[in-house]
Image (tube, rainbow, N blue to C red):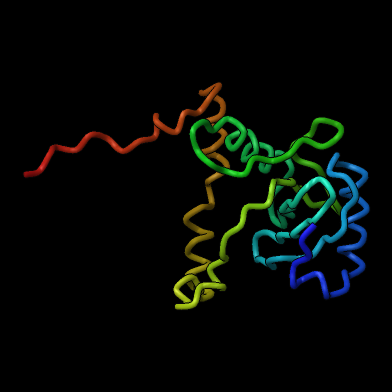
Length: 167
């Protein structure tokens, strides 16, 4: 397996406990690394490297398990959209709990976080972050309504309406 530049850092006690917990809950093989990738004000994200592949574990800091399960149901029902869907645990659960926080494990998708962009365009001020949180405040209520009404969510059904052609 490729060793990332992050692998030179020693895992914290919390990361070590999380590593052991993941091995006991998911069929991902032996976990070589479990490293906090992104500290957030809403979620913490950990990069997990195992013999079974690379994963992202999201620890939801301010959501209940039922709210996260609603989100998982939406992601699992999406069709024709390349998104990382949560992986079922050995018990068949898509949302588990670790230290009283709901978590899910998804395949790792390569990319750059906003902070990694050379032009810094992704950096948000505290005010912008607060505005984003307010904008998404009722997201789970809206998602619950969508999930309750649909068995499968085809992204094509969310396409923009036909606009008049311009010359």
